Structure formats: C-alpha cells, structure tokens
Image (cartoon, chains in turn purple, cyan):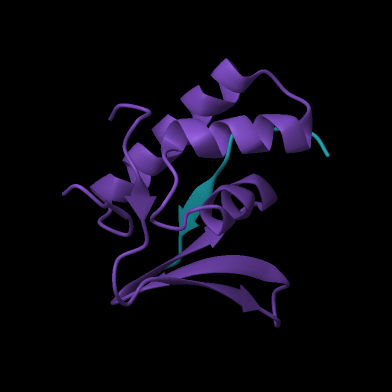
Length: 92
Length: 12
C-alpha cells in the first residue's frame, strides 16, 4: 500500500469501547479485534478524507516521534487490517 | 505519550 491511499472503515465496521474489559475494540461483522492505545489512536484518525501520510504527519506531531517511522508502522498496521477485510480504501 | 508499534488482536 502506498502512503497516499486514503483508508476508510467499511460499512458495518466501527470502533467500540468494551467497558467490561476497559479495552478498545474494532467491531466488524462476524469478527472483532482488541486494539492497543496506538492502534486506537490510528483508527480514530481514519475518516475517509485523509491519506496515510496525512494521518502519520498528524500523529508524529501528537507523539513527538519521527514521521517516517510512524508512517511505516501505520502502513503495516493498515495493511494487516485490510488483509482481514476490516478496513478499506476510498479508491478501492 | 510514547509511540509504539500498533497492535490489533483478533478476539476468539
């Protein structure tokens, strides 16, 4: 995936906070994934408007971390979620 | 806040 692609949560996929376990969850039809704080921070920025590069730039400022390293981590994370079909792209 | 590699763990 290139960093210019714009990720989007498909219909029926949403973020949820499981109050019982105190964990963030990505809910999708027939499956669910626990998210750590960073995973939740990334998916909270997915709005179907901004590219991976734009999200990385924003989070690099928030976390005061190197943008290139963050962009690489986000790309890998979103690729993994795309393989699981719980995230899509506006141009696909 | 510190950046770490993000994780998503599938729920059984």
